[in-house]
Length: 137
Image (cartoon, rainbow, N blue to C red):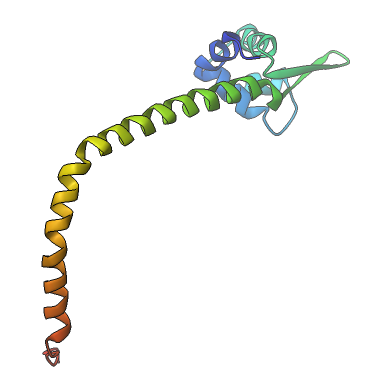
């Protein structure tokens, strides 16, 4: 199930950058912190804690080191919520477009019926004309 913790965690650009760093490779916290020289180690630890509590990263201890890797399944709830949201929004858009088409159909039908003879006449003229030789040299 999806909760707001994932959105809260992803709201911060630095946390999104951390998540990208550990997406394909497990990294120690010190290496993650080295990518952000303008941020203190404790601040990076706090970001990692928020990501871990949201279920977006997994933490593994190896001796005194803490290693972090992304948990793709942590995004599953968000992905499902977005899919449902867009499915609902697209269904609303489809219904609005169909309603507008139904409202415009009588006028469009008359215009289309009037255009058919003109189009046929134009097509007949175009096919009955002899082709002129090209003037390109």
